[in-house]
Image 1 (cartoon, rainbow, N blue to C red):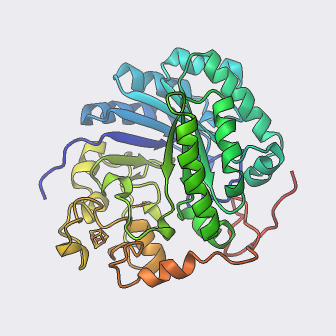
Image 2 (cartoon, rainbow, N blue to C red):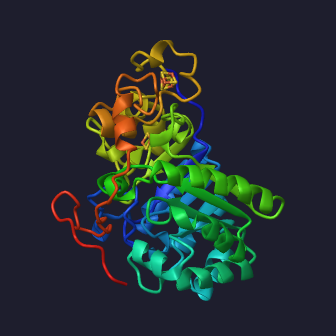
Length: 372
Ligand code: SF4
Ligand code: FES
C-alpha cells in the first residue's frame, strides 16, 4: 500500500496514573506502571518527530496527564513546533499555579471531564472524594487564565437521568463547548458493560435532552453528542478510519492506531524507542493491518459505505465477535448484529461496577464500589 498522508492528530497518553477510578475508562485493564513511562527527553524527541511528520494537533491525555511534572516542557515543545495543544484532564490536580504555568508554556485548550452534576454522585462514580469540587475550582482557574474550556461527560446508566443538570453544570463552569458521549465499551468500560449499559428509555431521554439543550444554549455553548453504538444500526468511522487520521502513543512509547489497539490479538506494538515515528505510521504492521479497504470481509467489501465508516471499530468487532477483522456488529448488515441488540438490553438490576485501579482487575476481583 502507498504511504498515507500525515496524521492530523497525536493522542499522547503520558501516563496511566490517575487519582480517579472511573469505571468507564478506556485504558487497558493492565495499566502501565510509572516505571515503564517514557522519560521526558524521549517525549520531547517524539514531538520533534511528530512535527516533522506533519501532525497538527496533540491531545495530552492519560490517565491524568497533569501527574507528569514535565507536562509544561512537553506542551512548550509542541507549541514551538506550531502544533495545537489540547489538555484532556480530570482537573483534580489543576490548581491555579499549575494552570498558569501550563498557559505560559503555550497550552491552547483544556477539555475537563465531569462525572455528574451532583457532587456526591460524581465523586462516587469517579471514586474520588472531593473530586467534583476540585473540578469546579479547576474550571475557574482555566477561565481565569483565558484558556478555552470544553467540558466532557461520559454518559451511562448511573448518570443519564441527570443529563439536563450535567448540561447546566457545564454552562455554569463557563464551557464554550460541551461533549456528552455515551460510553464506548473498551478497556475498563468493557469489563463494566453490564453495570453501565443504559436502558432504551434513558437513551431516548438523552436524545430529547440534548435536542432541547441545543436550542436553549444556541450561540452560547456548543453541544457535541456522541450517540450510543449499541443502540445504533450503523457504526461510526472509529478514529476517522484506521491509520488515516490519528496516531496514539501509550505511556510506555508503544505507537498504536487507536488507544485500545493494544488489547487486539496480533498487535505487534512497535515503540518509538525502537523505530522512527514516521516509519511506524507509514509502514508499521499495526497501522497497515486495517488501513484502507483491502482487508475488509463481506458485507463491508462490497458496501457503498466502506469508505464512509471503514467497517466501524476494530476493537468493538473483536470485543463482540473475537475477530478484529470482522464487520463491526453494530452494523445491521453484520451477521453478528443480534449480539449487539441482546447486549443493549440493560438488566433490570445492574451489577455494581469495578473502579479502575491498578490491580483491581474486574475478571479476578469484583471489588465493591467505594464510599466517598
Ligand atoms: Fe459500514 Fe461494513 Fe456495515 Fe457497510 S457493511 S455499513 S461498510 S460496517
Ligand atoms: Fe480501536 Fe475503535 S477503539 S478501532
